[in-house]
Length: 279
Image (tube, rainbow, N blue to C red; front, side, top):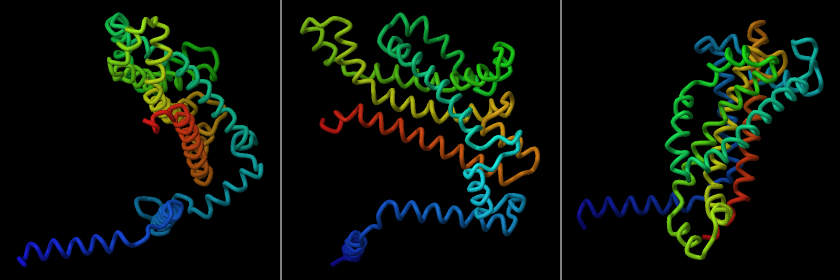
C-alpha cells in the first residue's frame, strides 16, 4: 500500500468516526451561540476593550429590560416601553404594508410588460440608489406630521426590495408554462392568476423579508430625527443622556421586533409556497 493510499484510508476512517458522533439538537447550538455572545460582551465591558467600559453589562441590561417590561417609565415624559413600541410597530407596519401593496403589482407589470420595463422601470432605477435616510429632510418638508414623514421613509426603504424581487420573479418564469396556458386558450387574466402570480410568490416573499428588515433600519433613523415617540427615538435620547442601559434595551427590543417580523413573513411565505416542496 502506497503512502497516498494509507493517507486516504486514514482520512476516510476519521471521517467515519466524526460522522458517527451524534450532533446536538439545534436549540442547544443556538443556546451555546447566544451564551458565547453574552460572555464576549461581558468580557469586553469588564476589560474595557475599545471603550466598552462605558457600556452596560448583560446582567445590568437584563435588569433594565425587566423593569421596562414591568411598566417602569422610560426617559421621555414617563411613557412606557409598550407605548414607544406601539408607535414604532405601527409606523413600520403601515410603511411596509403600503410598500407591498404598491410594489407587488408594479413589479408584476415591470417583469411582464416590455412597455413598463422600458418606460417605467428607469425612473425607479434613478430613485433606488438614494439612501432611505436621505429622504428624511424631504419628508419633514413635504408632510405635515411626524407620522407621515416617518411612514414615508419606511415606505421608500421597503418599496424597492419588494419591487425588484417581484420583477425578477416574473422574469424567471419558464416560457413553456406561459405557452401552455396560451395554447389552451387562456386569457391574460388566466395567465396572471394561474402562472405568473403563483410562480412569483417565492420571490415576492423574499422581497418582503428584505423590505421588512430595511424598514426597521429606516424607522430607527427617521425616529432619531423626527420622532416624538418610538423605540428608535427613545434609544437616541438615552444616548444623548448617556443612559447606556436604555440604549442597550432599545437595541435588544428593535432586534427582537425585526427578527419576529422576518420570521412571521418567512412562515407565511413557506405556507404560500408549500407546493414547491412537492415538486
